[in-house]
Image (cartoon, rainbow, N blue to C red; front, side, top):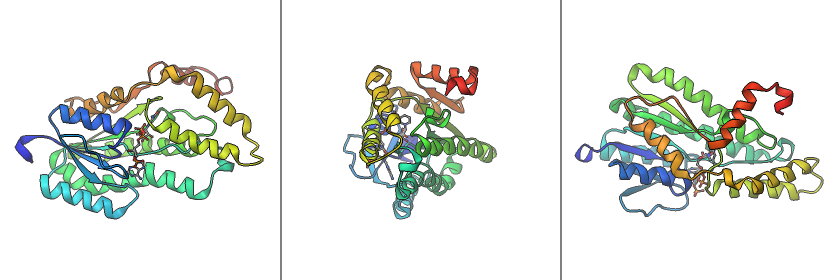
Amino acid sequence: MESGKKVVLITGASSGIGLACAGMFRDAGWTVYAGFRSHRITAPGMLPVRLDVCKGQDIRRAVALVGRREGRLDCLVNNAGFGLMGALEDLEAKDICLQFETNVIGLMLLTRAVLPLLREARGRIVNVGSMAGLIEFPLGCAYCETKFAVEGLSDSLAMELSDFGVKVSIVEPGPIRTNFTQAAAKFADKLERKKGSPYLPYYEIRKRLMSDNAWLYLPPRDVARAVLHAAASERPRRKYLVAGPMGLYLLAKAVLPQAVFE
Ligand SMILES: NC(=O)c1ccc[n+]([C@@H]2O[C@H](COP(=O)([O-])OP(=O)(O)OC[C@H]3O[C@@H](n4cnc5c(N)ncnc54)[C@H](OP(=O)(O)O)[C@@H]3O)[C@@H](O)[C@H]2O)c1
């Protein structure tokens, strides 16, 4: 470990929330391994590491690199992910599989691979979940289910690792201003253009909601702040909701009868 600095590995660090986390950890004095898939991160003070979470070879190489250079890992931030939006009937099997491989399976396999280093350091795991892992919505069948899975996984892991001093937190963002929404919209628009989808009204409502509610989007640094707290605080919380006014949606779900809420 270089001069007593703590070491973090962040997936999907080339943009959005991952990039904001990488900057915030660096500024807090951590050694930052910034995982990237397609765009190599070039910001000063960050160590780029190729890490497509769907590729076993990338996982093995990245973990070996951190192990060789640092001999430990103080925090893994599982942030990489994307949002596949569309009616279940419209979605292609290969896209559903990729959604789960990226948001769930890749996250699990990387976590499994770094656990020896994390146990050594009595480190932390911070999973970037989503409000979509707490609340369902139409066209979210694939994405929501991956984030519900990350919720469950985080709770199981927290129990499984508590005797080893490894703490697990999940950060649950609401809408955040990143590339995520445009990428998700591209999927939905493609499906909407598919001839004869019986779900057209849902696609139209989704578009209108997104353009009418741009003011609800929070900056990625708000999420990064929660991630850093989970990694560095003496008393990290298990769950961090970062949703701003959208948190009211959860309150509505909790207090309203299901039929009214829907
Ligand atoms: N933005 C929101 O409203 C929001 C809300 C709740 C939760 N989240 C969650 O926040 C996380 C980060 O998303 P973001 O908002 O920051 O979006 P973003 O700007 O699109 O960033 C996503 C990052 O994940 C990377 N990625 C995607 N697939 C990957 C793979 N197979 N292996 C490694 N990296 C991969 C992307 O890399 P490339 O550049 O190579 O594509 C990119 O760096 C995601 O897990 C998302 O589900 C976002």
